[in-house]
Length: 348
Image 1 (cartoon, rainbow, N blue to C red):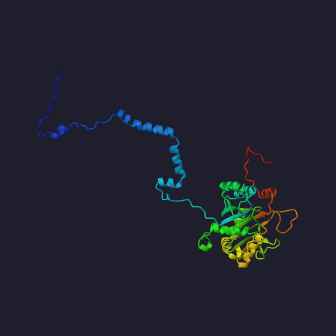
Image 2: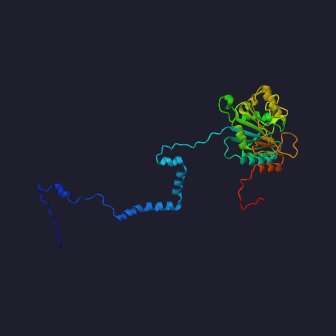
Image 3: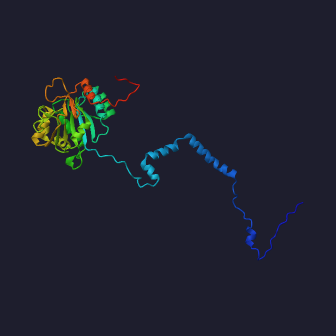
């Protein structure tokens, strides 16, 4: 039999009681072993492994987004630029081009959309192109035109019966003033929705870069721009601008939309009437003749001075009545030079 001896410390002033009691301190909570710690952390490691297995790109995606977003990335490091927003350049001016056409000319609108769209990159002005015609009057138009609108959203249908010289141009300008105006134009004391509004035929090829360069130094008010008629004249104050395509400043568009005198004299040869409206009212004091940069398609024997050969600084070419004339014109101005080689097509 083993007898354990218990040491009893003497109660002496030389040995403090606290020393006797706390010589080997006891822990209320036992220190966990290494194995117990591993068991406690195992569920967390297991969850992390499952998450990484199911979503392997999550952390990479978040870091990619942060690096691509300068605002978010800078906010992580406390940058003072965290509230910086993207600044876009203010356009030199805003131009609305209304192409007066007919509802049935689907192929022509398709071609014009291509030609305008290929010129929209790197413009210093804001340009909108709209295709303008009168009320639909055929069942197929009531299906096919809405499909165009759903896809392109670039059609304006005027409240008129289709015509050439029976008020369509007046309806166009007066409708534009109402549709885009609403008191926000020059007369309302605020910046107008457009600085210039163009009326263009659907057989007119417009070179946007050259047109913008030509318009940049122009006044923003009381401005009338185009190719002077008669063809042998270079004086913009003599008569009027050719109906192939002419441009009015926004204040003149608003005036046309509000003038009773213009409304009462809206039928007639449309380009001649526009010149008469301005001349009678003493408006359009800032007039600019774009000839010879605006002209009719060159033909072997020109019938008048409005037609001549292609020139490099062309603003617009008129009377492109068929696809071969369009192709000839677009070839001269190297419109297909951006076509990339591909095994999927061969164009000789």
